[in-house]
Length: 185
Ligand code: GDP
Image (cartoon, rainbow, N blue to C red; front, side):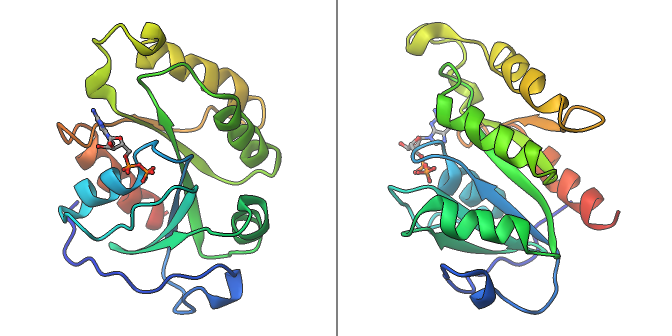
């Protein structure tokens, strides 16, 4: 899978304002500093496509074009409405920092998506930091286990998961392949 074209389309804080062209969409979601813009930039190989933000961001993917959404309002208000009412949404990519122990809010996102049966992919970020013992020294595999245990009870099988690093580009091809497989499904 390759990115042939990437373009910022628009920013919106309401589901109705989102593009209406019916292209398959993927949402990147995760707390501040988890690595959303870095991952997006690594996927499209651009330095400045994603907006950096201090708030959780939902990025809608349209084929391989991406529209970052800076959620300035309550996460619950826009993103939850978007997740529940968007027929073109293929999968929510929940970004989780693999270099630190799972945070409560990450587990809350995961169980909310699970409870609402919203297809999700667990995307672990910053896997290049695994060897450093600071930050609690949790290995990505240990973090993964926490999320798999939490989420698999909501689905028939555990959600797909991908280990990534925006520094080494680990997982980049895997994400693109995963997206192209899901959108053709
Ligand atoms: P966002 O707020 O979720 O968009 O997070 P950013 O993409 O702005 O990243 C937050 C911080 O984490 C920045 O200082 C990045 O350089 C750093 N970061 C992001 N991804 C990685 C990664 O894969 N490895 C490492 N070592 N640092 C990362």
